[in-house]
Length: 216
Image (cartoon, rainbow, N blue to C red; front, side, top):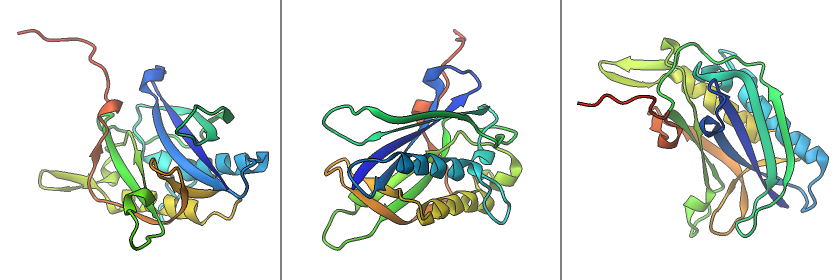
């Protein structure tokens, strides 16, 4: 099997490369020689994850993103995973997403953690079987948040959209399989399940840079 790294890159309205939001997925392919058909399947899988609606609301993951996100521009880059030497890009594709982001926005740092894991094996470190995707920046549209007093959390609808998209990605029948990738042994393990917590995460590296300064 080959273990591939696939980056899904989202442009912000600033169109500044440093502001790009990048989520990294990993996939296993049947043989070590990667075929064009397998690369096609990974591209299709990522497009489906972000752009296809999830029941019962028929809202896509891309539809809960902040309106600071560029309306359509997306980029996918795929390469073989290696901790030793940089590897050549096997496929790079830019496409226009059909899914507009939602109205409203949290600060760019606000994200939701989509956690996934491979098969649990007794006696082995479980962190080698885990993967995380920090989905954001997010819309603060009222339907996507739950307020209790001063507490603001992702709504059940939002968590269901992410969970449904993840389950669909896991259950795809194409040649490429969504997987975890250990930074210790570089072994890919198929995803079996996962979760989305009802709490936001902060990705500091996604924060905007200061434009001005008030001196006192």
